[in-house]
Image: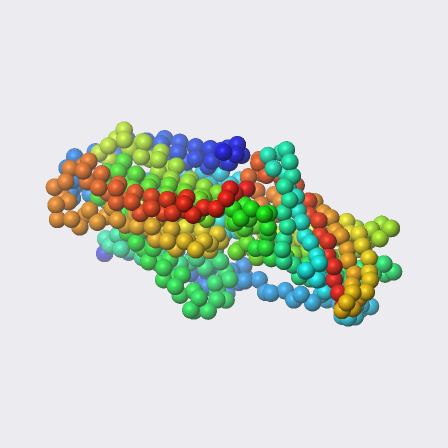
Length: 214
Length: 302
């Protein structure tokens, strides 16, 4: 082989070796993110038994988005898990942590649901979870709180503020139950979901109504 | 059709089609005409410097059109789809290497398969955690299909005039675009393949003006690697029960036309009969895949 051939082979081998190193080597971004524990880090004044575990059977997460800039259509997520505690006496003890499998999106249209799960929108196989974790609560009176937290969607984590209403506490068949309703509006483009922004709105309103037991 | 979808398709299709038409029009015009008879003389790729320019032009048109269609090239990539422009650069390296070595045909196919394998694990890092039994079939199938696709695509560029070669590459690209849109429910992936198809349509149109020119072999390599990676993403991120069938039919769209070269009477076939048979062999598997995708599509999406 002449020098040119040798150099081309060497360059090709180099490119392949570099690619192989990037794919298989011990680089940080290549590694799958470690599974986060569902157990929140407890504050000093809160015991584990104080936390309510989300009851997915009696909880709902719905969202709405504008279509063709004329009307809203609604969808929901059929599965969720998480924990929460809303402490009206000491709001700093409060916390919410919710994870939602994006694969569970449901808009009552099989074709649209598959499209929503595709890389065009949620890319559910690539980013299987949508998650929210609260950082701080501030009381607005009348059982209303502004909750600062982090929303992870489409592989991106952004700070958001959620309006939360403490909807009550009571006694269920298996112990104490509590609930809340949270509302927030996000711009999907800020999370990298930019597909079809002309026909499908950028603003997505999410309403989360959870019941938990302990 | 939804006006937003039409606008998105226009943004995705026009720049690569115009780029292919104008840039390859100029590059083909600068080349020397080949012998009008089929055989060894026509089978030669354009001279190396021009062939290399073909590779660079194809990669440049794809990356710039991708940026126009999908709002830029993300640094660093956020999703697997965002990695396609970077895969294009790796495919460019393979395309160039395949034109500069004596065993370029097989080296290009092997290197293309290697790029496909690396990209597979970059697209879905969770595969690192999967067991051997879970990943092995996917790895083996990816290597076989990309190897076959690249070998077929580069052979089409070697054996055919530019306009035929461009059409032979266009058919699997357009078919994959339709299968990804209809079968995988992903307009985005469909448009990714559609960018390649639009560029090849532009090249085919340009090549009809200079019918005796050849297309750089590396262009076939680049197109096959990129299309393979879009199809792989369809299987990984928008899976359907027929994902692998679509992938196999797309690869066959590249491979089957090369069967003509193994026919004993192939050298005596005229340009048009040979082209007709090749195009038919490319259309058959791809049209089958598109028909299955259309027939099994459920209700309207989005």
